[in-house]
Length: 209
Image (cartoon, rainbow, N blue to C red):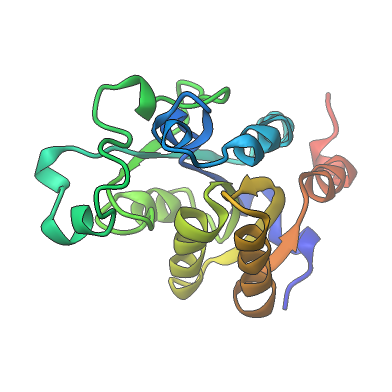
């Protein structure tokens, strides 16, 4: 397996920000109002903000993933999985679908998804191939659902996966830890934001002018 320094070379690496949106992260969002604990999602955002600042300084591409649900993508199978637990999550043109305390810069792509994996019926793979990306640094929520689903599929599409333990969050520690175990055991490298940022700072080509 390649080492972490090899897996974060900025020219070959994209930061994938999955579903850092109000309905998933804010206590006032749909999941928070439904009783899901969103504290971990909110707590990881400062680490994510530091990572994004460092990635932009290193000129590594940042790609935001945004869940949008609307009637035309709500199949019976998809809606049925919720069993009525949450009536509306990330509906199109709502506050709940907006990003939480992070946002793409004007030139940074936003990929809209309607399912757990950001590769299903989206342009993500085309964007990554165009940017000549080989490595994905995975961040966002929730660790064990949308982030893991995207990471798994990315790995099976032959991308190298770096999964950040402190830039991802789930709705329980057990779920978060199990996903980290899965990633570490089968799909990629688990690291922290500080691990990645420190290595970027050591790369001579990235020293500020």
